[in-house]
Length: 133
Image (spheres, rainbow, N blue to C red):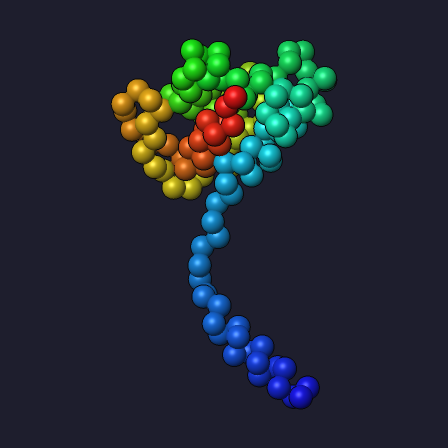
């Protein structure tokens, strides 16, 4: 029986598709990696680093509530994209530069204009939209 293990493994490994690209992280995963240290796992502005900042991070679950019940996608995207950590960026926010790499997709944040936007930024914005209270 033992002599059948290696051939079986080789046959099964041939069934695994080769050359598939790794999928980019989801918006929730990127939020956890880039935002939760300050904004908290629940996006309430209560992350472990929040107490060390001069200004408390925003409660990101209340964006729509602060905007008359409407999620301001274009404004949120402008805020996220501006925190890419480019030259002259003066912000306590970490660099989001890795989120700018990769595929561009059309993103309409609610203003009727679909602008080419890095897919990972779109996913973060859509994640934020999905957690509004």
